[in-house]
Length: 277
Image (cartoon, rainbow, N blue to C red; front, side):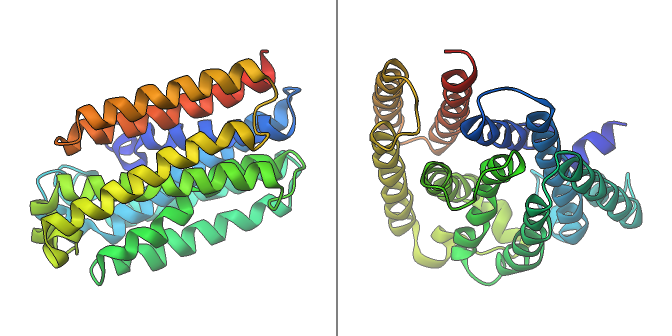
């Protein structure tokens, strides 16, 4: 059971589900079962993609201290079992989207797998800028939720959220790769610092962090929130997180955690704005 849980990376999958739920609430503030089907579909999609990824990178995972205890890499689970569980999770994801009544939402499933598992994953050994492709999949879950309950993927409000999430995802990936750069080099993955040097890697990350903060400041004037009080709270929260990032800018680990917390709170604020206030 422990190995299966590790295979699905539950913390990431739950975060993905939250973002899909927030996207659903953004379109329809009246909670119904479609909201939860959309969130479940995103969770299962993330779990299936994670399982497939661990099968694909099992050799590389064995070489890295951070990942050598993952189920497939450690030998606790066979590659066949990992793929079988991945297919099962992806089937559950498709089932949840169908139960939500959204045939259009099904398009995101193969698209996500194609981009994350078959484009981004192999490109990690070719270029450190593969993360710009991987970030696309990180922006999909709220759009999935929005479409699942009847919205259009091209509506300005959900596109705004997706762009903010993309901008967040890029420094998230970059900070993670720099934090474990020694491990990544052992596995043959390209990192910004290994290819361009640490100063340029820091410049890249800081530029994207600044872009993320600017994007957050844009949210209150983009009609994403219904209530002015929530827009004001969003601005205050953004200032707090921007200040916190400046204070810990020398620590990639602390910056990484603050960045993640910022996005969790952003999605929670979206949900509160739509279904509680």
